[in-house]
Amino acid sequence: MTNLEKYKNAFAEGLEVEMDKITNDLEYEGIEEWDSVGHMSLVACLEEAFDIMMDTDDIVDFSSFQKGIEILKKYDVEIE
Image (cartoon, rainbow, N blue to C red; front, side):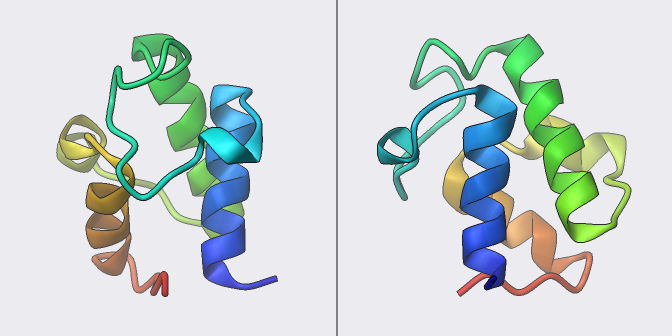
């Protein structure tokens, strides 16, 4: 499984949505499921999938699908 597939799976699992809702332009509160509770579930799924612990600032800054890719680079996770 590629890192992109892991990333998308974490979104689907964390937000409890179908894969077709996971798009490159997805943003926080852009869908009903990505609220504050969904956000924390998403973060937990990403941390588990990539075996990392995100800093609080990064969790707060994680505002979109694309921003998440940028943030994960800080943890040596490359999403292509």
